[in-house]
Length: 273
Image (cartoon, rainbow, N blue to C red; front, side, top):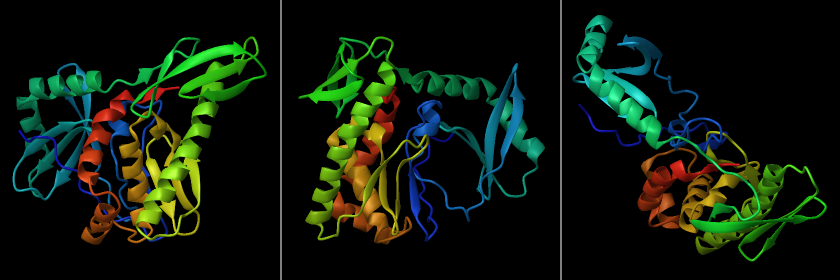
């Protein structure tokens, strides 16, 4: 059985690039897929088979030298020789049914999304640490007092909406400063920046409209925010995932490999607010 595969980035369309980010309501397996496939790249077909009392979805990728099973945050994927009959492929899976179900359950448990309660005295993951939450009487505003988020709220106010508003305001300020610093260090013009609330991507970029970064990156360490910003800046030079693109990422963010690994590992800690 194979170990989880390394990511295999594919070229994006020349009009723009979208890099994945977290889905606040989907399971974390969907959040950890960092790079979107190009529209021109055929998507593997999702199939289903019954293992015991469960129906299991899987993707079949043909053209491999031998039969392999891979289970990671994205689910079950099967690699098989191109001409091998589907019946033989699924029979192979059945012989490893216990292992497949066990690994699927382990990934589901490990990547369950994290819901936060927003109330006075709560804490929120913030830049790799924590920010305290204070709730006071007020006119429905979110303010920052150092690293504390103050929600000045009327009775019955939506504290979750106020917290999102405050985090997004801080994210726009911080992301803008980090993007400008990275661009300046590389002698690049600073592109326009906007925030994204995308469910499945960390960021996107376009030569026409600039860069969008997912505001939920505010929960993660600054080094990971820098990596995503550098990734999108590099796409303004190379709208693909070619070796030249990764060389550009390395120029902007020398520790990008470690940052990318940490981004995948920490995505499970992204809260749902």
